[in-house]
Length: 341
Ligand code: ASN
Ligand code: ZN
Ligand code: CA
Image 1 (cartoon, protein in one colour):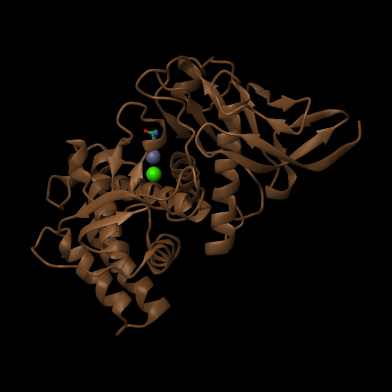
Image 2 (cartoon, rainbow, N blue to C red):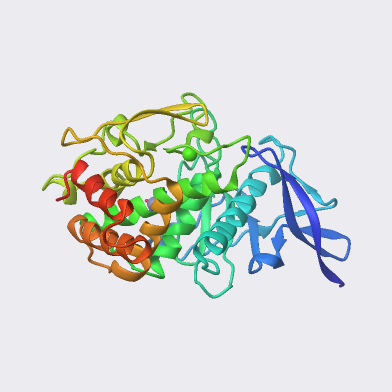
């Protein structure tokens, strides 16, 4: 069969109509992008891996490549199985472009090799995960939650791959919280980077598929809003589930980028308090994301704690902007503002 790259498009669930680079094999269009490391998306047909495979973390059930008879994939609704696949593919594309253009990193592995996606995984599965090789997305329960294929979650899951291949932060204790915070930070930066009018950037995680409340699972400006995450560091932080101990790192990053107090961002109200009564003036997303990426890839290790993250980010800000820069001073001030001294 003759195989070539073609300009296609997709009608997504959450991001409107998006351009896609697809593969034309004979007369069939495949949801596979040769321009981004061969990234592709499979449909697992609502089956799951099974207990043994899940226990081993293998993700054995491959599913089948999503194809179309035309270069347009999906119809923007869940009635068409390809729509969620479009979101997943678009999410990997934007995340690929984000790491390439903002951080000079060639994909998750830094090698130019792409990853792949599984969509329609399991039944009523309200989760998404990275398993070392690929991303997997559930359809949600269909009433409270839709498919978990939003830009921020795609960026979150792929960023687990970046963390695994750089600092390799352990997934427990304080380093686990930093691992999760890293995924929320870069997932959110991907959402801003994409500048998609249907899903503009905010510091909520998963708002697009939260059908009832549009609030998502977590929020970075005020992590305690979810009832489980802390805004401020304590000696108990290490004992929390990593999706809650991330609150301290998420709160730090929000304060660093945007500052304390109320702020409307892309029409959504944000409001970040500090833990020490200080006022923090943000340095902006561009500098904040560069500082976190350099800290992650140069200074953090598998056992980095919150105290170590403070040291790592101050060093990164010093490297990038100088020891006497306002960026370096604000990194220190933002950590103090979340109780990491
Ligand atoms: N969605 C979760 C996450 O990426 C899955 C997990 O608990 N690892 O954090
Ligand atoms: Zn995660
Ligand atoms: Ca979001």
